[in-house]
Each structure stands twice: as C-alpha cells, then as structure tokens.
Length: 493
Ligand code: PHE
Image (cartoon, rainbow, N blue to C red; front, side, top):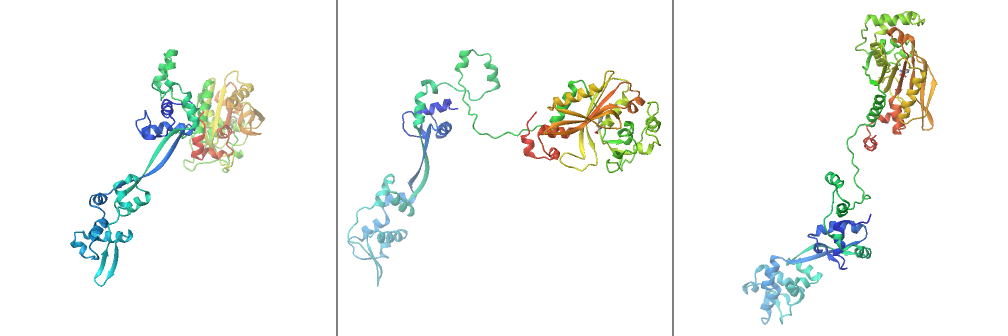
C-alpha cells in the first residue's frame, strides 16, 4: 500500500526542493515531532531518509564568563612578571593575584611554557622574559563556535565551558521519494482528510452524492502493519457448542428439560428396566452416596416398577423374575446418565406427544484417558408421537450430527436394557470411527406402566467427544484445562 496520506504528501512536497531539511523546520510543519510523525511511513517505504547527527554544544560557565572578562590567570600573572626578573611565588598575592588563581596560573605557565618556575633557596621563583602572544585557549573562549574539539575539551576540563551533546535530524527525499513527489498532484496536500471512519460518517455516506464522496479524502490505512491481537472476553468453546446444540433442538421445536445430579437408583435404573443385578449398578461403576444414602420413592412408583421387574406386570413381558428390592431402588447416587431426566419427564407427561432434549452432567467411575472422563455431559432427547418410528430416530440423529458438521455417521446394533431396538452411533473423524452415544426405542416395560401409548424414540450422546472433534483436540481432558492461550485463540462460532 503506497498511497500517501495528506500529511505524508505534504511532507514529500515540502522536501521536493531536494535539500535536507532540519526536522524542526520543514516548511508547513509546526514542530519537529509533527514532521517526524509524518515521515514515519515514508521512511519505511524508502521515500524519505532521516539523517541523525550528534552535535556537541559549548557554553561558557560562570567561571568562563569571569575569565573572559578578567583574562586568564596565567595571562594576568605573566604580565606582572615581564620586566620584573625572578619573582617569588608568595609575592604574587601582594601584587593582587587572588590565591585561587595563583595555583591555576602556575600550572598553566608551566604547561604553556610562558614562564620559568624554579625552586631556589628563597622558595619557588617565577620569571618571564617577554609577554607571549594570545594562545588558542584565549582565542577559543572569545569565539566558542570556531573552537576545535581538543581546545574545547581543555576549556571544559578547566571548568570554563560546559559541553552538551544534542541530536538533530534532517529529512530529505530519497531518489524513490523524488520520483514519488514528482507524481503528486498539486492539490495532493490540500484540503482536509478523514482520519477515522466513524459511525456518523458511514451513516452520512449513503446520503452523499458521488461528487461529494469524491471530495472526501480518506486516509489510506496500511493493513500490513502488525498490531496487538485483542483478547476480548468470550464464552468458553464448550459453552459455545452447548449454545449451538440448544439452537438446533429449539429450531426443531424441542423443549429443554433438566434434572438433578443426585438421583435414586429408582429413576436412574429401575424405572428404565435395568435389572437390579446389572453389572453397571456395581459400586465400582457407580458413585453411590453416603449422605443421603437413600432417597424416598413414592409407594406407587415402587409398586409399579416392582411388578414390571418381577413378572412383567401388564406389559406383556415376563420381567426379570426374582424379588425386586425396594431398598436397592431407593439408594442415592450420582446419575450415570441423563435418561433419568427423560423418564421423569415421560412419567409426568404420559399422554402427550413430546419433543424434549436435555444437556446435563453425568458421573461414572471411569478411568480418565484421552477419550474418557469420569464426569461428562450428555446430549439427551426423546420424541414421542403417533408416527414416531425407527426412521424418525435415525433421521433425527443423522440430522443432528450433520448440523454439527459431521455428515458421516454409522449406526451399530447395540444393547440397552431399556430400548429395543438399540443402536450405538459412531461419527467418522480423523480417519476413524468414534463412538458418540446410544439410541433406541423405549421398551414396553418402560413406557406401558406409565400409560404412554406411542413409540418413544430416545438418544444420549456425549458432548465432550463431539466438542473434541469440533475443536480438533486430541485429548478430551484439554477441554477442562484452562489453557489461556488456547482459550484466547479458539475462534468464536
Ligand atoms: N443412556 C445411554 C447412555 O448413557 C444412552 C441412551 C439414551 C441410549 C437413550 C438409548 C436411549 O449411554
């Protein structure tokens, strides 16, 4: 992008005379910093060259001013000596030379070779034959601007001048800048420029005529300049995906349902016709609670479910046989799936067509690894209506995963005690099939005792595995590690 802004054009035109201008006095620029700001990008584009020079400046100190007025101490002393022969050092004070100057004078008389300094029996004697010509130090003090660096350094060492370094910059066009300046239209640096695109300007823009628009000088922006990447607050990637899932179900007319983490074995297992001796109910698979250790289940619910388990009741099934243990049914636990919420919802609304989904945390005693978490989230749902069939189920599952971005799904026959048929769903990801959850049609042992007449198609998917695939993670645990860099760079959906 080599279009120039107004100020940049102004600078190039100001330098068009080919001279190097001190940055503080570029025609049309009030201050040095104004010119340097305008020069910033032209310098980077190779159009303008900045030359920096360090200058040292010398100023008379108060002592220097005194010496300039009164003469150098060695000059004053040598004048006294001329025509007097050898003079003892002590006499200088009586001749009017201040004590402080005597020391200095003697040293320089020696160095400048203006007088002989000899130690005799009567002390230090000074003698000069003729008055010397003015020397370079004396000349320099009168005209600091012309003094050489060496002499200025001597004067500074004597405390007569103060040396200060200062930087000065000049700006000049480079050959490329000269070419560029010659192509600038005469009015390139005239008028005003829009430096900021404001909402007001955008609103006004639509009402402006083409001629008016052409008059607006928009400041060119360089989009290649590196800038800091903003890290605004945003929803966690997992939360974003939950929102997306909700929107998919809402768009199909589903109602969201939710339940508690703490549940009785009754609603988590028994009401779903999971036999009381099922291996998944063992201590090593399920978190049973010590407090509360049990949850009271209404007598009617216990009776109804007990009949189904023992004999099949009125469902046409033979049940599991044996004796149904009501204490086992009232054991308190952390729910192992969200199907507890589904079956409670169904029990509360047995006679209506339902489309419901739930998103909830479940708990299993599982060893954590790259694809397993002991706490994870299920995407659960049911549809029940007169026309609900196996096709309804398969179609819904396919539709859901396709909308989540995974059109390739596979259904495998599986087994759950509460569905028939039962299937597991795999999604193709990263060159392999990943198991995402189960689904099926609730068995009569589950639905009939509640008074549900229509088919109930049901499913439960794992959110974190889905999220892992969506976010391209290799390890499911990364979802719950607060890696700030990952959170910052995860895209907004
Ligand atoms: N509850 C099952 C699980 O946790 C999933 C499922 C839900 C299967 C509904 C069939 C019907 O894996």
